[in-house]
Length: 428
Image (cartoon, rainbow, N blue to C red; front, side, top):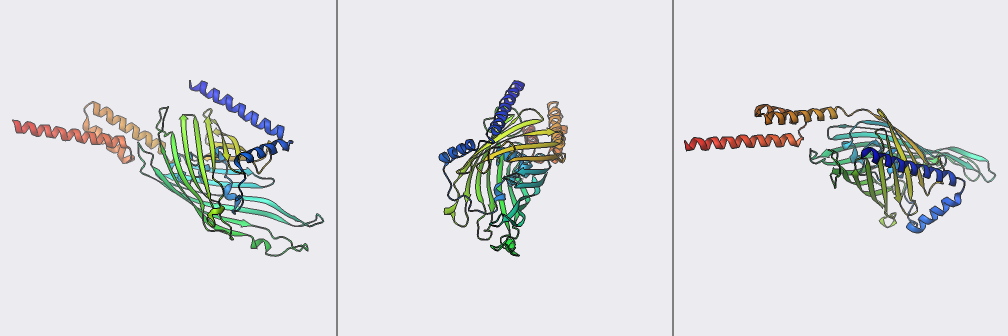
């Protein structure tokens, strides 16, 4: 059953992938096709008159990986690409990861990034940085080049999160925060007489600090398969909370997310985002939503995609992940109203290195083994041995509720036996 279902998913997504890129190749030199699609989306969702009023556009561009491909990723947040999407995710990641990102954005604009995250028990920590750069060239009225250089923006991130109340039956509630610093560098440009104005670029360059705050919890909801893994998640994230930069507001937003696994290989994501202009809430952009999905085709291959429905800025993305032992390669193709439909436009690449789980899996297996040995000892009437085994399981993992419940049951049994013995002595 599983293999037939996997084969079906593979055929469907391979067909979708082929048709998508085939249409992209067909329309690459037919801009009217793309224009008609853009016009159609604009008629449906309208135009946002407040779009483009915020600064630091790099903050609106995903770093890459599955977070970019699924688009709706704030509740899924199951790998390092979530470091900016939901800062609470790091305390629930299974493994430590190091990742490098490359993104071909608009025209000659490039984005390069790096990130690292790890977890110590219920405490997650990580960091990352990325830079956007594009050639800057100024020409005079005669077509002569009078100034040049690179315009660039960059963001540095320090992430911390902690998972509260986690246990065997409840995955806990993770609270995370990102401390971010951003910069913008503009090269010097020329005046109308073609003279380079020293310091003119510096006047438009700036630095800024901001924070992201996130909540994340996982739970079971209409689960159709047997696994300790929770099949649903919910999140709340406030992004880019900070003061204006040179009189312009940051792209602050409030995001609600939901993730659901109806089947083991299939993940669905849903995001709703409310942009907030902190300088003038009346100039906030319109709310928008996104839907994403991911399918594990085999142990080494998964595919994903997403749709963002936004006034004047709808987006479609599709991609895949190839797992090669401890290295994963993420490739995405993104189409939005800022670009043209071309086969190699908006392609991003991410390479993730699995640095291990700090023996968490081995410790979990040891706890399971101790618990089962305790049950076996209890069934044979070796209550003292059962107690020692369950106490050792709790020593390794104080939040392993089945062992605590078994010890409580054992204490209740001994208390009951003592009461029976007391009654027996009183009677005789």
